[in-house]
Image 1 (cartoon, helix red, strand yellow):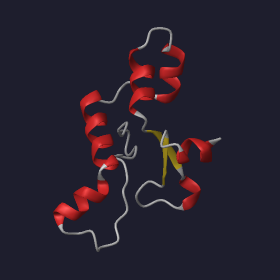
Image 2: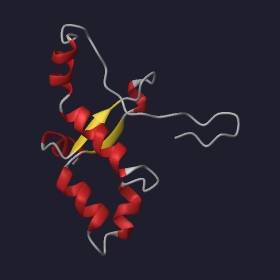
Image 3: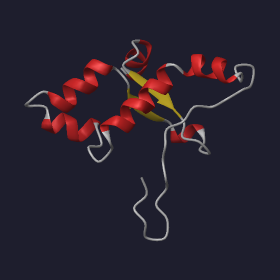
Image 4: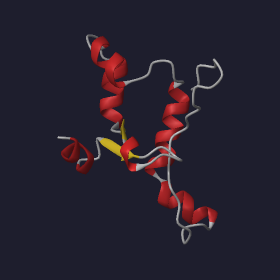
Length: 100
């Protein structure tokens, strides 16, 4: 099912920066699904499962915009010939701090 969702551009499979393949994560990237989970009444249980409500909606939208247009951004920056790895912002829990 995850492969089908990934092929349909509903989710994105990624490995967090600095992690190995065993740390594979999935991110919901379909704009309609994100909107539905966040804004449609009756989806509270689904929203809590799929969406971290502590994140800024503007920040999440900007992150998705960048990831959906990564090739264009790399070309404009003149780095399209350089191997890159896209990742999401994350700050690990350390020394009693909750992380992000």
